[in-house]
Image (cartoon, rainbow, N blue to C red; front, side):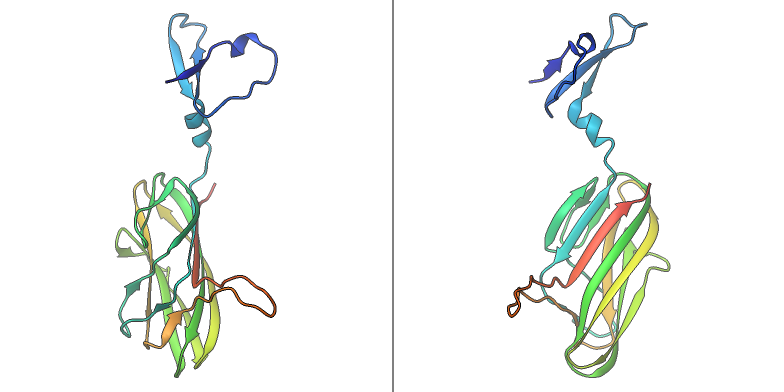
Length: 196
């Protein structure tokens, strides 16, 4: 049931509005026509699309030189970008965006192996979005951090993909550790934000 706020124009004070309130607005030239404004929709229209995710699992290259999708098991927060699966994110408002990616990579054994990470939009590789990291030695860990600007249309979906030249490459996650106490290390972080 709508909670109509009808007397705001006649009071000279601040009024707190609840998310389920509806304001009636009447133009002076339209004395018999009201326009309803939902408080929730009014404020939601001013929110910039964004999403922040991470993954707390180890993601290992399954087959060398073969693309595989990167998955995320933790959604920190989002608005106007919807996580539709563990790997896919759909934007509800088009525009220019920036993706920030931070991946904890590891080579379990071997030497001088390369891991690639890139963006796909609607299932197609995004031009100029690939980044490479070379991991020199077995048990070596490297942090790959990149920012990629790109343009999306309403209802486009975004995925991250990776490939490596060895099955001993992986995105490494570790649990919380002690001596000293420190938090868990996710294998990968992703934020996508619409630019102003």
